[in-house]
Image 1: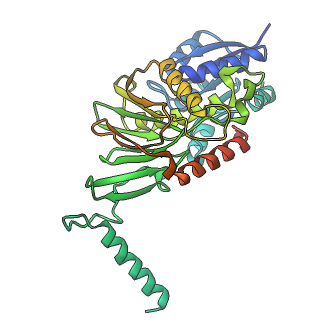
Image 2 (image 1 turned 120 degrees about the horizontal axis):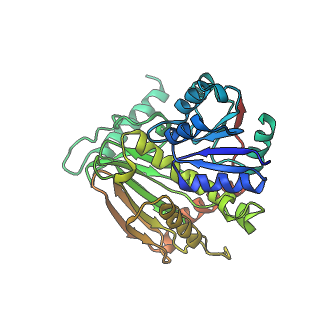
Image 3 (image 1 turned 45 degrees about the horizontal axis):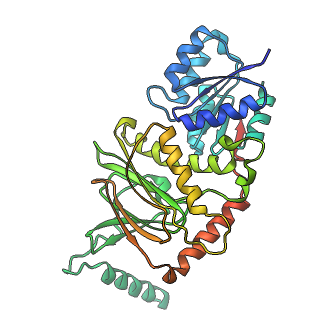
Length: 120
Length: 236
């Protein structure tokens, strides 16, 4: 069965790009428009990996990572942040929250898939 | 005083003279309004004609202001999105074009994920995100689009049109509407945008006088095409 990946971004264009990339590699994809929606889905469902933006309304990606890590069924799930932010301070916040990795936009599809394959 | 210091002092005097408004008012040179740290490299100056601070954008740059500054740039085939929160009167402008080589045939990833689209989306997203971070709300964002002239001779495809198509599609896909636009045609444009009022002033320039502009855009395009889009990945 195909692995299920959740992409979380408030930008429809970005969700579309991530979805197209992941589907081309055979993954199943579910989309959420912000951290809040992603968390609500995650409370009831498991995913194999989550790719989340950082700056989003309602709930940002770093808060989402902390909240997911507090859920027993997301303790070990790879959580990648995909963002325009590239500062060391932000990265450190992401790392402390429990993120698995940090990818700066614009992303390279080949490298995104290779990174996912390493952590899945 | 060493000769070096004397020269520096003379330069300062000259700068002060240049910044003095026509009515003798001293432009607050060196006291530009505070801005976000990642805009420290943006050229800002006292515009004595409009009697306000202005930020001048080069290709590939963007700027966001909360201090009533004007944003100025010169566009050939590049496009600028002028975006503001109309409720707060804060906003900014970007100045970009899509890379050329990487978009040829859009690769195996399809048009949705071509390097060109990813680069353009990032240019739009950085601008929008900064406005949201400064308190803007998506539902009160106002978009004006400008540029994309067919000005570069010697390039087979009309890169202005590609830039226009991209920026229009991006704004529509994100669910925003366009409040004003001045796109296409064959002229370079000098653009003044005031995020506090939303006013966008466009001067069409005669092409022959703008060699610097063409050189700048060509250089920007070359740099874009030589860069691999997206390589910054860190696993913790």
